[in-house]
Image (cartoon, rainbow, N blue to C red; front, side, top):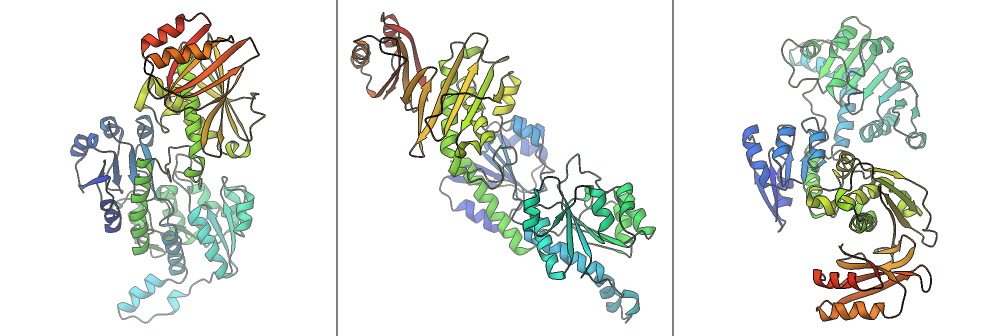
Length: 537
């Protein structure tokens, strides 16, 4: 039974979706104090919040059971991502659900600003019929500059075509081909966009690099009489610099939905901006439509359930999955990578000291696996560390835990996979030994170990197994089977590979139950035997 804590109002539809599930218990405690939240958080598998609850390092230190921290919205400003990652907690948001609402609000502000709609409305309500003061500016033929061409930026660009505007964009992370599809001209430098556009609209994420992206220097590069819109994040703009650009007349106007501090204090630059006649403002309404709120509510509920059940990992920001990847399609390879990592650790003689100086070399052969190098490497590291750390390691913290132990993983050119369309190859090198394991999928879903060091293999990495290295002489298989049978241990599968006839052989024996230590000792004493390992996969 998964226990989910809800600390903010996420909407009725999301709650109904969670309550309908038979494997879920939810508790909604809106307005919990930080101390009360820290006291309770250890009881839950997931927490769902909005902007009203801070999930900080102190909280994650108490979250012994927590697997998912979910924000019903786009921003993660209230979540300590580094602390969550260190604690192995998946952090997710819902970046797409309110994209249409944000794009439409951008256009609402843009049109209202260019035609002075709020000011004219206020004056007419006061009984003053005055047209000459509200001569506006039309959009057709003008250049719209988008800073950020992600989901919202792309939707704004699509709507700009209906207004016969030219659209340029600055986004160093967007390929030229995507911009061409959107019929948007990409510019290489922010300065070029600012110098060319009559209207500039912000759609960037807030990071350390983008904080005050538009300061005094950048605003001065904008055309005289240009207009600025921000429905993204308040801290993207230096508000004091924007105040100066508007009061000096350099900019004709601004439309602002967001501020650096919300609500703005009475003495702040934001408060002075709100008071200007050439500025129109709204109190962070970009996502405030009934449709967007309902969709966010349901989507966050679905995502949390998928992550808890291990059936999907959508919009988790501290997992290595590429945007748009269907986890279900790569899940069999993720499982295979974990199995390979776990088998590596269990077969290494010094696995208990697996740490500083250990190198993990990985290679991926075939189109299906080469497209997912990063998540598969993370899965392999998780498998590598699990025999030592148990449930404390997961997809979120595996890279960090490996780094903390001094384990270095990198791609390498490793042979031995030429016979398979798609294969994962892993070689681990310690100060005293090295071991190579190759795995693939049969029929697209069945994991197989097809090589261990120099031995070709067809091992099934499931459950308990014996991995035996022996001299290739008559009677070994029979003696091994007799010893296991006498101890009441049933053999599920027996696979064997050898380097050459009469040389050495490697047996991979799947068991229905673990072999007792006395049987393992007896096998080790058997003269043809070189090494005996029991593993659990």
